[in-house]
Structures are given as structure tokens and as C-alpha cells.
Image 1 (cartoon, helix red, strand yellow):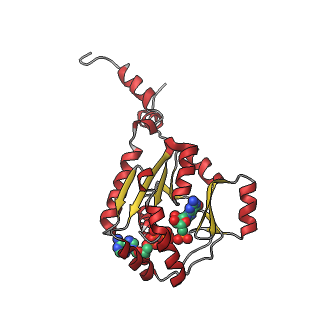
Image 2: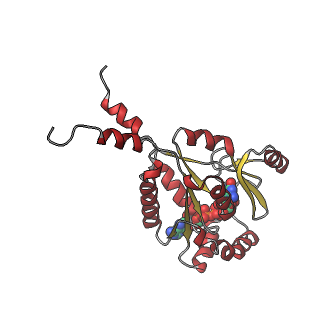
Image 3: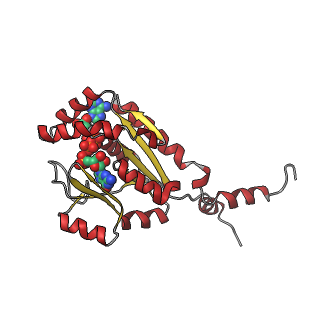
Length: 223
Ligand SMILES: Nc1ncnc2c1ncn2[C@@H]1O[C@H](COP(=O)(O)OP(=O)(O)OP(=O)(O)O)[C@@H](O)[C@H]1O
Ligand SMILES: Nc1nc2c(ncn2[C@@H]2O[C@H](COP(=O)(O)O)[C@@H](O)[C@H]2O)c(=O)[nH]1
């Protein structure tokens, strides 16, 4: 029977999907980097969280978040519908399970914009598939400037986010990668390199063992 060499190789080198997490104190720029990654990379999908916080101008329900009322969120917690969930800045946020589990099985990658609490929970559930990246601001003053310049939050909300920033940053060492977002383009380039390198990890290439076995079983050199 004729063997399609190309399709056989594609099957052999198929890999597991990964969970690429971006965390940072609010305003450091993870959403900015996440959007650039999604625009540049066809193979990564955004994990769309559910949240009880009000929608910001420009946000789209179902695209940026699933905006839900608290009783709806609580019912999803009861139904174990979240992979992880947490209270952040007085609101509830969670990652719906179904979209991720099904996609991961098909080898798709997901991008998560979640905090350290969610990262800890995902690490407990699926540490082998998780790639945690922490984005740091170049300084605390610059973090405040960015939150103000974003213009999406009232001064009281900005102060609450600033007060929490140090607590968020204290979790930096729980992440495999840490990148300072001084310049957007250079931060984005580093994050993209991390994604590319993680995709190539031996453990993620599920068909590698059989591929190498077949490679070694071939005729010896010069035969
Ligand atoms: N390197 C940078 N230099 C200057 N401004 C930046 C940089 N990166 C992001 N910004 C700006 O800072 C603001 C905050 O960025 P962004 O919304 O991406 O932060 P975030 O970490 O996702 O915040 P949150 O956790 O609140 O969602 C935005 O107005 C964004 O355009
Ligand atoms: N643990 C989780 N944290 C999440 C999730 N979705 C977003 N977040 C984090 O919340 C804060 C605030 O986000 P904002 O959009 O209101 O500014 C930020 O740190 C996000 O990373 C989630 O599903 N789980």
C-alpha cells in the first residue's frame, strides 16, 4: 500500500495543546501583549473568562469576557463548570471548563489572562500543560501612569488596583518566565519566543517516541 509520507509525519509529530498564562499587576500590559499575540498567531485561542464586573467601553460580551450576573456565576461554581475561579477587585472571575478541555484534547493552545490565584489552580490541575508568564511594569510610577492613561477606571478603582499591585508582584517567583514590559514591541517579541520554544518541548510532541523509533528502524547509513 502506498504511504503518504507527509501526512504520516504530521501525525507522528502532533503535539499536546498548552495553556499559556499571562499574569501581571493590573495595568502592566498583559491584555495589550495578549491581543498582539492573538493577532500574530493563528494557532492560539483566547480563553474567554466569565466575570461579574461591569463591561468597559469597547469590550464585547463573549469576546473579551462573558459578562454574567453573580447568581449565574455562583451556579457555574456549584456545577463545577470552572477550571479555576477567584475573587479579584471585588468581582468574580472564572475560566469555563468546556471550551478548554475539548480544545486541548485536539492539540489547540489557549491563552489565559488570569491572576496568580487562577495560575496556582491551573498549576495544580494540569501543571505539565501550563506555561506561566509574569509581566512586570518597569516601575510602580509607570504602572499608575498606565492605569490613568487607559482611562477605563475611576480614581478610586485605580487606587484599589495600585494598592493590590505589590501583593500581585509578590507572586512573581511562582512563574516559569518573567518579562519586564518597558517597550511593548520588545516585550511582545520575548513573549512570542517563549511560546514558540514551549511548543517545541519534547514532552509536548506526543508522536515523537514512535517517530524516533521509526527513524532508528530505517536502513543503516550506506545500506
Ligand atoms: N510598554 C508599554 N508602554 C506604555 N504603555 C503601555 C505599555 N504596555 C501597555 N500600555 C498601556 O497601559 C495600559 C494598561 O495596559 P493593559 O490594559 O494591557 O494592562 P493589563 O495588565 O491587562 O491590565 P488589567 O489587569 O487591568 O486588565 C493600556 O492603556 C496600554 O495601552
Ligand atoms: N483567576 C482569574 N483571574 C482572572 C480571570 N479573568 C481575568 N482575571 C484577572 O482579573 C484581573 C482584573 O481583570 P480586568 O479585566 O477586570 O482588569 C486581572 O489580573 C486579570 O488577569 C479569570 O478567569 N480567572
